[in-house]
Length: 389
Image (cartoon, rainbow, N blue to C red; front, side):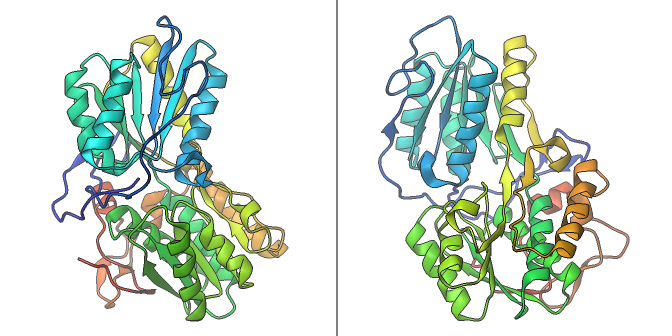
């Protein structure tokens, strides 16, 4: 999920869904996190050494601590799910792995040398390191989360989180009193930009007068920076603050300042029981279950998975009880449309869509393609903020 530098040139990718051609963003800044920490999971010993060579062994590489209540935590919930579903496999993980090649390659290679058949690297910044190590271990299956580079033994996976982001925007648009909403954003890359746009489109679908202010943190996991950014947005008039960050610090800032918040990655209600309205969340176990089944059956082939709400990989956390009954009913009806497939990410990004300057980017009756969505580098009308180059 963390990335290295925003690069203008994007590479096309074939998404393993009906949407056809698409491509993902490029690498971004390293997290600068702590040194890798050896951990143990299931029947693996510290550092991931398996106790039995007969079991299928699955390893995960995380960019942040599993206790972040966000991105890494959500992936680890998926790891635990497959461990429970498949007692005959072993899982292990290593957290806090920086995205620089030296650290990332060392950790990935160490898992491969120890006989892990499946290695999942859970950060965009691990992309090149994953590809490099995969060349050395052709019989190992590597899965890179959110990337676009593949090989015969390397696949990618991501989800259409913009679907629940759109609905969370609708909720925020209904709950704001000031018509000013804030968005604490990590890095100015397509993944984050399209999330801000989806949220804003949801807001303005129910409240055309509202605007969404964006503050960049240039970090994915730094609770102090995240909280400071949220506070600056609240100071500027926002009474609902959303986020694309890995910790619940934005929600905690909202709780302390008596405004509302929209979380991300996991259900952040416990971190801010009064403020947090809901959160777009991940169910990585849905994809990881399919992955293990395919590898065990010998049917796995490299693909670029891009699942949506209908597939179950993304969702919206339960709504806070502070949400009025009529608004809750409206939001739940919208959720059901996405779950049934009546609405999709292509509905979210359907015309007419204008940019910040009021110029039509997507005409009435048309929708953005998967490639255009995944490479989005402009803000929709209603967003206040710039995209650093």
